[in-house]
Figure: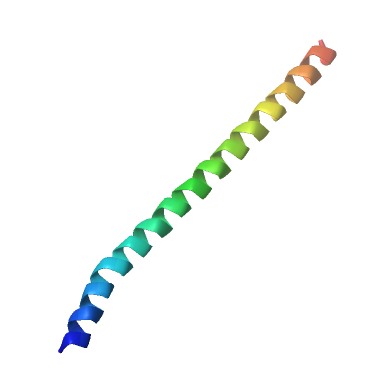
Length: 56
C-alpha cells in the first residue's frame, strides 16, 4: 500500500515536471533555430543587395 502511494506521488510529481522540462528545452531549441534562420536571411539580403547594386 505504501509503495503504491509513493509510486503514485513520484509519478504525479516527476512525470509532469519531466514533460514540462522537455517542452521548455524544445521551445529553446526552436528559438535558436529561428535566430539562426533570421541570421541567414539577413546575410542573404545583404548578398542580394550587393548583387543588385552591381547590376545597375
